[in-house]
Length: 296
Ligand code: NCD
Image (cartoon, helix red, strand yellow):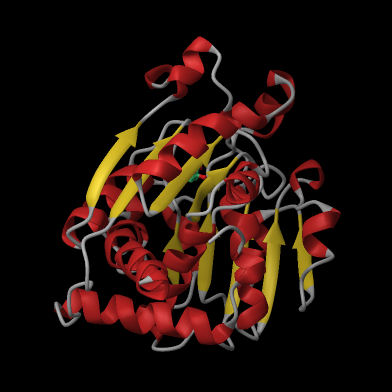
């Protein structure tokens, strides 16, 4: 599970139906006991906790590290050797790192299944599965919907993976709302099988939007603070933006939210970001179960 580009519709549908079953408690246990290593070298609340919770619910043995300071990488051990060690202890390795391509690299040095839990500003495929699953749960479908994806698509791994994931879903329209310097990279848009419409203002959110997807500006990935300050706050989704959206539309945010989303939206039916976060557990149960049962 390295890139959303490698997921096809059959696999996505399978993971969604497994996730439904985990929610209903209707999945038979794995045949033999298995183990997972959670190797997180960048801060995380939701992704770490939901992977850990999902692993415990699956009955997996879990070992974890939450930063490179926890590991012998602090003594100078390489990332490759760290992954090799974990491969000797666990059947699955979940990796979060600040370096683009680290999950792919780990899969080259490990014989075990690798799950990319966010690699730098590259990808976050399990988050995109959660996003699409939440959309499908709400609308009963994920095809033929109008999307507006807001703010920092230049540095955001969640929006990269979401854009790739949408290749499988025939969207009605995809609108990108961002300042020019935060548009997605050409290397991302060139891989999309659908057209995106770009606008630099929230006025570009279409009147028939179904899914408004917003993410914080990825402050830690900006080259300079001045550039961050020049866009900070300019794509704030306040309650008036939410009120202009159609009744059945939804707002998603992979979270954490910092300064992009009005807390007054939280109590409305459009706010689906906490449901989205909670879906992290059944989706990650489905992902790990699927990978382990393929290997058993
Ligand atoms: C995201 C991430 O880490 O990329 N968070 C998450 O995993 N839910 C989004 C972010 O940090 O903005």
